[in-house]
Image (cartoon, rainbow, N blue to C red; front, side, top):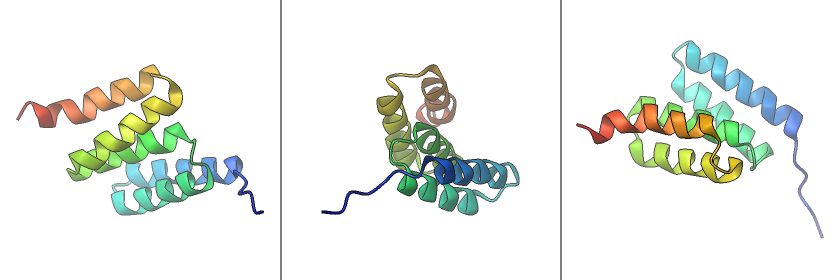
Length: 95
């Protein structure tokens, strides 16, 4: 029976590269890197949080909320995910 392993080092590298791409305005490239980080480490709450922000920046509120909720679930209501959720989703809800 095959048991997949978690590649946390490479997941962190993809997450960091996604952050760099997002800062340069390359949301699609950033999201591809966040997707790879999540594929390598499905418990990487930071990658879910960052991808949620990228979805929010692209205006895809439903997917942003899904990722923010997953980050919150993984971290047990960590403050950074809650703040990111509030900062990125709330403006859309007020329109």
